[in-house]
Amino acid sequence: MTQTAIDLTTDSRAAIADALNQSVAETAVTTMLAQNFHWNVTGMAFGPLHELFQNIYEDHFTAQDDLAERIKALDAHAEGTLAGMLKRSKVTEHDGTASDKEMIKAMLDAQETLASTLAGCGELAAGHGDTLTEDLCISRGQTHEKFAWFLRSHLR
Image (cartoon, rainbow, N blue to C red; front, side, top):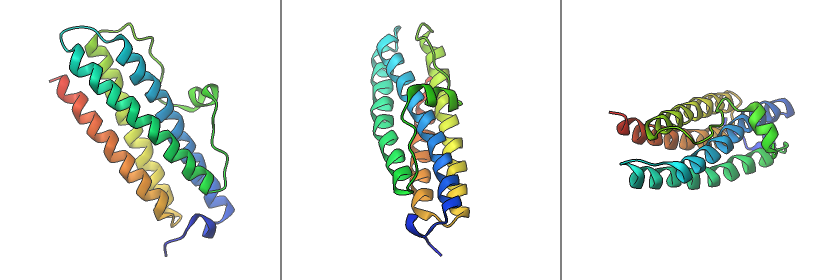
């Protein structure tokens, strides 16, 4: 049976919100990573990479809000501090002094991490009957896999 956030148990909402907060944290760190690379990329592929990194950070900025609003719909606290997000995230910061290929690889790793985290969150939500969160996670995961494909293509 499909349930709305209101129908879920307190424990289910808390578990799903925790997984969503993980997704928000990794999305926020990846947003800044993409913006950092957008500002600092150089080399022969400057134009397309500058644009790709911008597309990524603009997409991710909106995604942070979508994920956090789902947390609030579950009547939970959305982590909103950079320190909290950095502590929680499996994606790490980068100083932006890398080569273009190193930037691509770091962003590819971040996209794959996000896709995996969201797949896990979606599975958790499905297990609790929360198809609305599951759908959000599936959609976001597909976006990260698409960005990963774009990035991977630059490395071949």
